[in-house]
Structures are given as structure tokens and as C-alpha cells.
Image 1 (cartoon, rainbow, N blue to C red):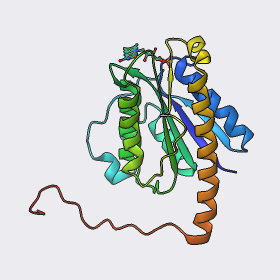
Image 2: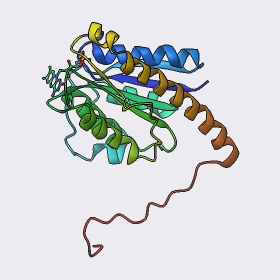
Image 3: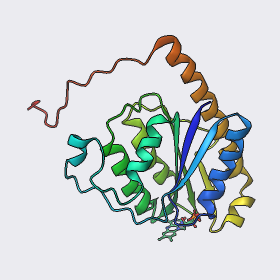
Image 4: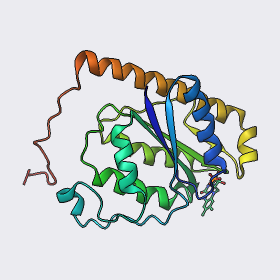
Length: 209
Ligand SMILES: Cc1cc2nc3c(=O)[nH]c(=O)nc-3n(C[C@H](O)[C@H](O)[C@H](O)COP(=O)(O)O)c2cc1C
């Protein structure tokens, strides 16, 4: 059975982001996909300190929060959904610190795991935040699931989001598309194996040095 991890970046366990993610979870279950919702936004998650420990040891130097624990789950999962409220036009600080460390500290292949970003704002900044979160996937050979609108809901409270019928429809369609992609990719991996990737070139300067 396909499994998807959902991260709630909001400090609120039952706020707008959670409402959007729960709408996806209901649909995932209807589609026979296993889910695990992990609350990240209520933890004190510090940022990456670029210490290089993970390059040598395969995990983050900080063992005091969720990053290493979620990394082990992410390695086994078929998909990852990251949900965030919009703070000043961007994803919130906690989820950004978490995602920087999760993606930078893990060396396992994320190729063909399916990613999806979900954002919630009261008024503005959803699409800019959506773009930021999708960048973790698109540098990691992860196909990105999409829906019938950009993956966003609007509201200041969970009650507002429950009235955002198009937003909730977008979440259901996103989960349906993501379920299909995870199942189809599992079949394709069996049939074709994963595409091989080149890694030799790593250029920081135009002269190649
Ligand atoms: C520090 C802070 C900054 C915010 N900045 C924005 C913003 O730039 N645009 C916006 O529309 N809403 C903004 N909001 C409102 C939240 O994004 C919005 O209410 C969101 O749906 C809350 O989701 P949650 O209940 O999952 O935390 C901000 C809220 C906070 C606490």
C-alpha cells in the first residue's frame, strides 16, 4: 500500500492548514493510501547551521527535534505533502527551517517520490509560498502532484476554510492525483526501474573551477 507523510507547518493543530490536510487525508483513505500526519509547526525547530555533519554522518547534527525522525519515515514513504500557513508572503519560518534540514541532511534517493505543497493564507501570498515549497521537490527528482487550482485554501480560522469550498475541492483533487501518481510510479518502478542520473558535474563558477 502506498504511504504518504503529511507535514503541518502551522503552530495550530486544528487550524486552516490542518483543515486542508485533513481533507486530503480523507481522500487518500478513500483511495487506499496510508497516511501519517506529523505536526512540525508546534516544535522549536532551529535552522540549518551548514556545519557539514550530515555530509559525513548521514543525519542532522541536531537530534533534539523531529528532523531525523521524519527523515527515516520519508525514506520509506512514497510521497510527501508539506503544508504551511503564509507568514509575510512566505511559508512560515518553522517549516522552512525544517525543510532545509530535512532535505539537506538526507542522502537517500528521493527520485520519483511524489511531492505536493499546500498553503493557507487569509488574504495574499499563497502562490509565492507555494512556489518556495515546491522547490524542495524539484531539486530532488521528485515529481510534483497538482490539482484543479494551485494548492491553496483561504481563511483565518478552520471555520473559514470549511467555507472555502473550492479550496477543499482543490485538496481532494490533489489527493486523488497524488494517489494515482504514487500507484502508477510504483508500477513503473517495477517495470522499468528508476532512471539513472548523472552527478559528475557540480559547477559553481562559469569557468568550471
Ligand atoms: C506572523 C503572521 C504573518 C501572517 N502573514 C500573512 C500574509 O502575509 N498573508 C496572509 O494572507 N495572511 C497572513 N497571515 C495569516 C495566516 O497566514 C492565515 O490565517 C493562515 O490561514 C493560518 O493558517 P493556520 O491556521 O494553519 O496557522 C499571517 C499570520 C501570522 C501569524
